[in-house]
Length: 225
Image (cartoon, rainbow, N blue to C red):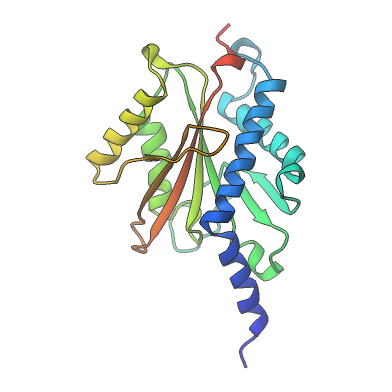
């Protein structure tokens, strides 16, 4: 006899893995960014760890602190856990893994959301950093293989050669288009303009994934000294 409770909880994840829910998660991330702008500063000479990881860890700590104010109280967030997909030779390390306490134990490790983090500065490397070690990892199923929605956060500490946000998006889209992948489309949220969506087929299952990109300007709180 089929266990109907399994279907009940699968449907609950289907509700979580939806555009409406993920947009709510992105709104939480946007307000986490605003909180960091008001409370944090970073000096290159004082950062003893990999800068991307320091930004990410502070971001996660702040996100957990304010989550209840933005409609969440059930998030479990870990940094750099291993992807659990069994049918790939090399498992990825997930920058941010978001799980939900509302899911039954049998599903909580299978169904979750992933956010990959990148740092852009004068050492901007779109091909190696953002495309090959970011977007492609989602398309190949190395990251977030069981979800239709995922995220990427870009911490921009400096604008290379006086670029602006639009120039970075143009360069990312050029790399995507070179590889027959559709462009990032601007999808502003009420409180923040620089939100972009990439919808494209995954290589391993021929199903769409929607990757929401948050481009966060850290230049007001970063010092290169």
